Length: 123
Image 1 (cartoon, rainbow, N blue to C red):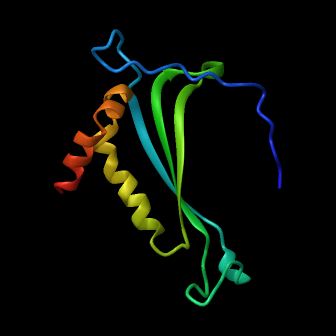
Image 2 (cartoon, helix red, strand yellow; image 1 turned 45 degrees about the vertical axis):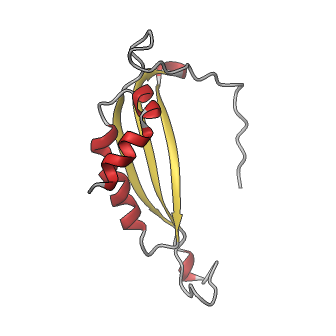
């Protein structure tokens, strides 16, 4: 296992909600990847309920237009672990969120989480 030490502390600029004195960062993409590890080949991690798990994850990347370190845009990364079965469902669930966040300001998303949630559960 490799451990990488960060170069130094990273300061993430504050995101100002729209209408609160600044325009704020805008979400430009939500990508999701189906990542699987073939642990079932050697039955690593198996148990009575999961005899052949392939440890897997839906790996999501929320990309913004906000400038970050070294000229890169700010991104947020998240994982949702599964045992393989159902991983495609998690990837599809993240993909379904795209229309609710892409093009929106990060500050608006943060301050209006309940409104977004309420809209999503109607479907």
